[in-house]
Structure formats: C-alpha cells, structure tokens
Length: 471
Image 1: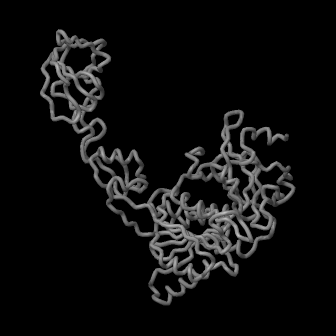
Image 2: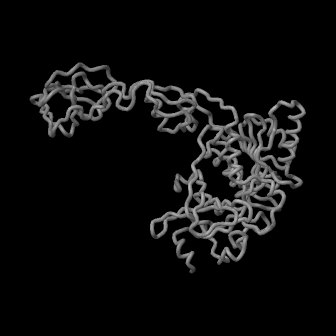
Image 3: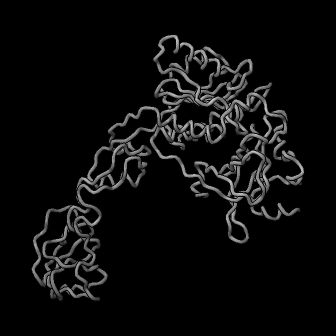
C-alpha cells in the first residue's frame, strides 16, 4: 500500500478512489502526463488531453467569462414580482423589504409558566386557572397580589415580574405565594416591542424566503409576500440511443440525465415543469422549444456539430427568422457559444426572447453537470434575483493534471488531515461520461489550465446536497 492509500484511509474505495499512478514532475513537461484518472474515458472527451487546441476550443469563452455572462443574462431579464400567500413563497426571493406591521410582541407577555406578581412578596392569590394565552387583557394587579400565568399570556397591568413555577412555593391553605429565590423587577417578562417596533426594517429585498422567514413574516403581521417567483425550467433530453428503463443493449444506453437534472435544477432554485425525452428529431425539437412556457429550457446533447446535433442549427434558424421579422426585435441570440472547460466545452447559452433562455448541455453526464454549474446555476440565480455566490477556496491534497488551455472541473471530497486542516481530495472516475466520481463528491475543484500542485488553493463549487461542508 503506497502513501496516498495510507492517507485516504476511511474513504470508501468503491466511491472515492484517487489516482494512484505516479505522475511525472510538472517541470518535465508543459502538459502533465495523463494518468489513469484522466485516461479512464478512452474514446470520449479526455479529462486532460494533450492534443492541440482546435478552432472550436479557441472560439469558446473562458470559464469565468461564461459564468459572468450567464449571470448578466439572468439579471437582464425583466423581473415580474408577484404577491403570493405565505404558503406559496418558500424558496422565492423578497421583492421588497420586510418591515414589521406590528410591534413584536404586540403586548407585554409572560416568557414562562409561573406567577405574575406586583410589588414585594409574599403575595396573596385567588384560586383558579389564572391568565391563559389568547385571552383578553386581565385585571390589573395591586401591590402584594399574584396570579397564575401561562407562557405567552398577557401580563396584567401593574405586574412587576414573573416568577417561574419551579422558583415559587404556593401555600394553598393560606393562598399565599412565596419566592424561593430573589425576584428581579422585569424578570421573565417579554416587553412589548422587545423584538421590533412597527415599521422596523426586518429583512432587505433580495432575501431568500426560508421557513424561518415565513415564520418571521407571519409573526410580523403578513398574510402575503411580494416576491420574485422561482424561475421555471423544462428539460428536453435528446438522443435516439437512450433507454428509460432496463439494461443497456444493442447500442442503446440508459438515460442518466433525466433522473439527475430535475432534482438538481430544483436544488439550484428552479421549478421544473417537465422532463421529456425527444430523440434526435429537429422538427420535434423546434416544436418543443417554441411551445414551451418555461423561463429556461435545458437541452441535453445535440450541442456539437455532428449529423444529429440539432440545437445550434435550430438557434441559427430562429435568429434569422427574428431578424427577418423585425430589425428592432429582440430575437434569438447565442450568448455563450462553447466554454473553455473540461468536461463540457460544447455547452451553450442562448436568449430566445427577453425573458426566455435556453441552456444547451452536452450529452455526456459529467459534462452536463459541468454545464449546470457553469451556465444554468448562475443564470437561475440571477433570474431569481439572488446574489452571486461568494467564491470559496480550499487546498487540494494531491496534484491534479490540467488541460493545456481549458479550466477543468474535478470532483473532490472534503477531508480533515491529521493536523486538523481541511483539504479537498480529488476523486477518480472523472471522465466526461462518468458519474461515479461526482456521486461520491461534495464539490468540484476549479483547476486552472496547466493543472494544480498538491497544496494549491483552488476554488471549490459546492454541490447542492453538500450542506455547506466547504462553507
């Protein structure tokens, strides 16, 4: 067992195998030598090829430029805030500041079950249940009087403190209450306006509506919220070779993207209207795109220049038709035509109308994931009027080979070393057609052209289900 195997002890080898082949030192070659990790997808797009740059690559946007363009495209789309009931606002973004419509609490309340008392003790009290939550204002207390009170109940006028039940002794025979510890004026009373006053600014516009925000809004008096709806998405799976069930056979393969994309897009903040398998038919694709009511149409496959790759020809035809119809019309326009990233360089982003976009993902599964994080994520975030994510960087434990001119996105898992320092461990099975590595990952490392040495700090893209393990 070599050193790397010792260090990765505890990671399930079936899911998180790191590259174990020795690598040549970087200074011996301008392009790192391919390893088993980078050559695993022979016959497919290589994760770290040594081939020369083709014109197709040269025309693509850099990875940072592509993400910025996708975010700008989302912000350029017109916002259409809606006022919706609280129960429908979860996951949306506030279109206006949340301001308190009432004091919180709106009256002095008891913070504990116990006794409301007035003045110094001991205190006299009457038999009965006392003051319960949800009742009208109780009678005032005189000095030397006490009354039982429940949590959340209104404090009677002139009460000076609340004594918790466990801190008091009630002599039922004499109807006298004695405190078992010092009573401090105001204790366990939540005064009116303690949390906020009417008109106080609670949250700014652009805040994500979480369950806690819904609770705060309800407490502050809201029945509805003005919010930016989650963008809607329709997924179109292209490819005559795809099966939706059973084992692969006779040149057919299982569709991995249909089950993957809808939940991933929901995690990115979208409402997925439908996922449809269309095959490789240009007319069916045209009708599906033009008939969609979604804000964003996501296609898989068909973004290259092969005989059955129909996405770009469709977009070119739509752009010509729009120009012919009106010189002033805002018609179809390809905003990102290829990205300098591996896997996934044939991805694209197009604007179909001022408020409708198409994200073309490659057909290989990990390449499609790359497109999701490169183009779909920033676009959907901006359409929802959420701020751009803050970059996060972490050191990588091992050397990662790079592409000579393109950024690489490599699945990684988060680990804590013997010294307690966190680092990212690159995972094996990271070829463009593979999902085994990403299934074990909590993030993707952004590897610059030329690769990264062990210990280099790289930007990490969190995966939606990673629960902030990197942040």
